[in-house]
Image (cartoon, rainbow, N blue to C red; front, side, top):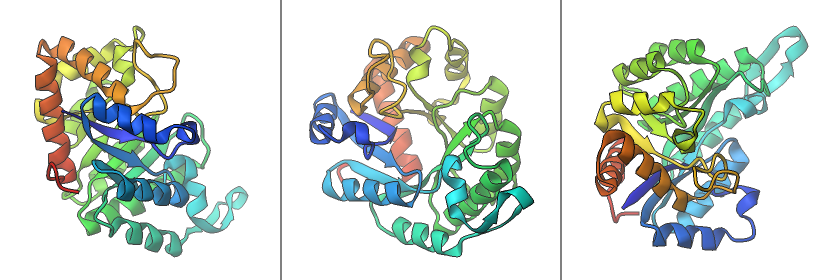
Length: 271
């Protein structure tokens, strides 16, 4: 059975057939899925899905893109802002629900710059501390922000655990993550012809640190590339990982399922 460790089932792209999408995943052998928030609204929506569907769990957090929403008295032009304590109380309240198994999706994205870098860093730092206080893993987004990500994670409590999801960085970043005890989430890009460096990262990865994910509705793997992604397609990612590691796909499914259950402290068949 498979574990899709990162999805966005709350997406409006699933609005018309969400129930069918989840049913297709179940038929494909996807026993567990984690659906991730990016702000308070989506975190609440994903928690509601986790409460409704067997095998689905939620993550709650503020994405780097949405970091500016966690401010009050913001004046970006003058660099005058402070974090909104109410936001953290609401995130913590969501995380108190047993269906929430991680703080996420959180992190840094310097490609689009939807929120200022210093704001993203401050919001991430606050959530790393929150995750450690709640004893929950983090689901980290990292795009063109390696140096700041490493600095913030290294400065956090040694008890911090989590995953660099949809890993696309280089081997040096991967080796730092493994040394820090983080997992690497392998998504659809490993099947893309123009992302060959991921093969080597998967080969070098400690097997106990590998997860697979769809990041749906984004980044559908080959041969579904260009379509809306969905959890059932995690099978194609497992097949590619199996080919890279010269393993049977059933063994990759079992390995990554066990890894995800360990990281997120999920007991199979318990919800």
